[in-house]
Image (cartoon, rainbow, N blue to C red; front, top):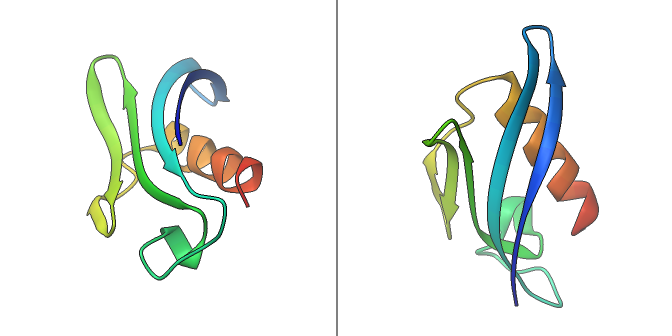
Length: 78
């Protein structure tokens, strides 16, 4: 199932709005992030891709906001 949303991330530089699109399954798999349920995930901030995973890492976290948003979503869909 696809999920889409926005997360407001507080950072040392202020606040960053991160938009996300995630394909999440009921169970983890070898294609999921760290073997988890998220098999596809794109994070964007200010119109730029700051993280992308599509059954493998395409774009690693580009900044602190990407790292925090990734952690939040990994927890949400564990």
